[in-house]
Image (cartoon, rainbow, N blue to C red):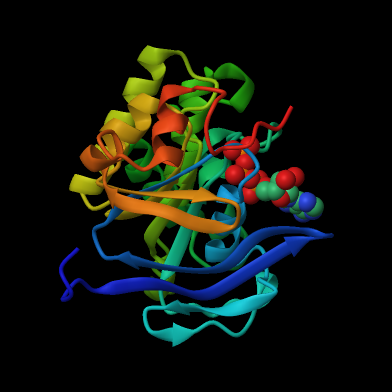
Length: 262
Ligand SMILES: Nc1ncnc2c1ncn2[C@@H]1O[C@H](COP(=O)(O)OP(=O)(O)OP(=O)(O)O)[C@@H](O)[C@H]1O
């Protein structure tokens, strides 16, 4: 990664424990503008925990988070980040009682004085960007799993004209293809790259276990295990490295340095 890349998010010395389990142990991580980064590693190693810390949903026990060079002070309900960070959750997390348009526009309806018409226009533009034009009046129960995922993408990339500093600049994807069949996964993977190209979600961090999603949506990879970043590099190198932890992970072997948790 060249030195002159613009850093949007910097984690410095981040540690997090739950009870007596140390999940993240003094982790440093930089996310650069335009970067497509995948965080991989065995189940339960803290990948989602890192995403939640970046999103400001979880406070680390130690360390600092810098967003566009500013040290984050408030947490959860009191975040004043200088750029927006959108999150796509593992399950689409849509409200069943709201239609698609109301789901996607939820934060603007709740937190801005924008007119209904303005919000509907913004929402419809985003629905178009995720390949779902004209479905704003439908309800989540009427959609396939892949469509619900795409609706949640539209929600994550929704801009806020009342406060452009909150326009999503970095998107955090938590296992966006989990539970989808291979073809539906391809649709989502293509969409992630399309959104990167057309400016919907130019910079992103992806947590995934799925091989096709790693290969098709990541440029760089970090491998997390035992609270530490054990390996990082370009996606092609991830599949050719001699690192025994990474090798074992991709081979699926039960023999190797990764301890098996039953
Ligand atoms: N709020 C919480 N309270 C207690 N333990 C938690 C909490 N959140 C996460 N954990 C634990 O921390 C560990 C890391 O969880 P996390 O979800 O970050 O892992 P992960 O690498 O994303 O796993 P997976 O690949 O299975 O999704 C797990 O053992 C989990 O049970």
